[in-house]
Length: 169
Ligand code: NI
Image (cartoon, rainbow, N blue to C red):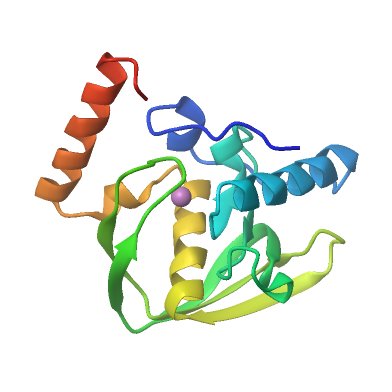
């Protein structure tokens, strides 16, 4: 089932998520819904706070559904390695219509659990590395705009506030 995606300004997006406990039916349904929601929005990643659930879990697929083998579900993720640097354009389903060049590590390793509760270790470079870092930020209550330089960040936030005032957000 597709769930509504919260937009910048919604409280759940701006506070840290808590660890997932039991991988029960509620969590499994959430994961199914997050995958449906990510693909319906043509996204490459979606974190639980974006659908209003403050749990540390995200789904990611750099191929955006073109290659099913690239789908990852990561529960209680941690970034255990990060090196190098890249700065590419990013967007976010919670900030539709806005992008920015975000400084990120070039390569990261994330660990966590898959939906069966088995340990996973994901090594990513390029786009996958950016997605992993972007989704980790969501779990800590951050969005990509928070990592932009002041001028670019202020510009985006001013435009969002204007959309909010006019009921278009
Ligand atoms: Ni995002």
